[in-house]
Length: 247
Image (cartoon, rainbow, N blue to C red; front, side, top):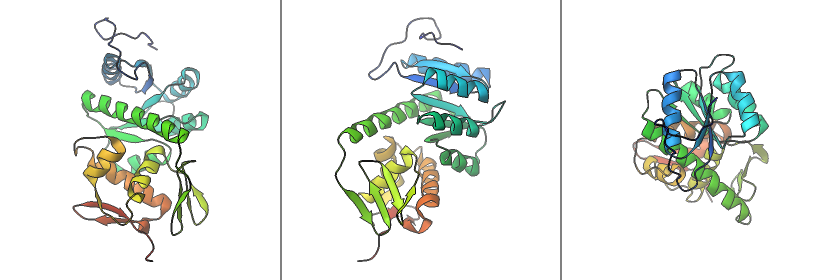
């Protein structure tokens, strides 16, 4: 496993604001893992790699990465099991990679704690951008936790506790990933108002373009499964709205 913080040419990478964060790349294709590692080191990250499920879990426990890039198809056991085991140790943002444009895989990945996903083939530029976005979200969540809003937002049987980042439906706790929580809060800030996919991408993912609209759709589906499909309304060709009880 490689820990040297250098670019592919051997020169030290330029440190960027908030860099020196640790990224564990779990991928069994040497060409892909080398390309990802080289790009992230050029962005100023410290990188380690693992090529199978057991090595990924062991490295995550020993090295304590700030973010995990995780392929679904791995020797040993798959990326979904890696995600479950790593998240059981401690919460860490996870960017899933899949060779199949299979929505079921994506939803299962989001369900076991992944925050985002990319389908192969992908550009290294976009991957690096998503890593930065995920880490910025973690930083924002830490700031919000230190200066929490007071009170609990109640929308019928749905309760959102900003201070504890907890959600309840009919007084029962619902486990949401950090991305799902941020998405729900974004919709709840303007209940019944329709937010476009582009607006949600900008607010939740910090994306300035519309290249990730399918990511929004998949996260909405995962969120509906957890809080109830009837609570999020689709406006075809536009976006989504959080439904609230009629006064």
